[in-house]
Amino acid sequence: MSLNNIIIRQLGLQSYKRILLSMQTLTKNRNHSTLDEVWLLQHYPVFTCGYSYDNYKSSICGIPVIKTDRGGKITFHGPGQQIMYVLIDLHRRKISVSYLLYVLNNTVINILKKIGINSYYSKNMPGIYVLKKKFVPLD
Image: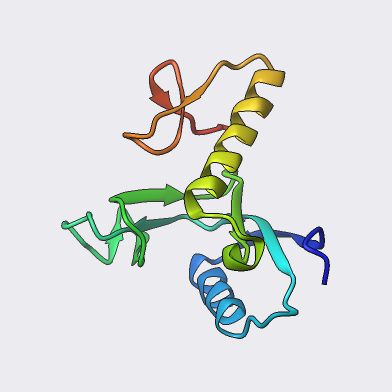
């Protein structure tokens, strides 16, 4: 299998829980011939909370809140916000998580630069920043 083969899926508007289950299933069933995948999608309104969020409620203003196995606090996802899930076998590709994040962050920074938006990455506060504020595209 060539490491250049990656499946890119445009999945449209999806339930967070359904996508989470699909990602877990793909990862659990992965073997040496499973192709890596990139999923592009949007979620129905949902808050996800990581380990650092200690004020858990099942919903906020009628929007469901889902506990996740990631770090961080709470994040809103909704229609109009493009999400990219990268389902890559890092061991097989011989790359680290930090290198993958470096590549993804620099890709976003370079795309923003091409459309005239100056941005940067902060190691102390993960994410892409524009004018000292976290970059969240509006459309």
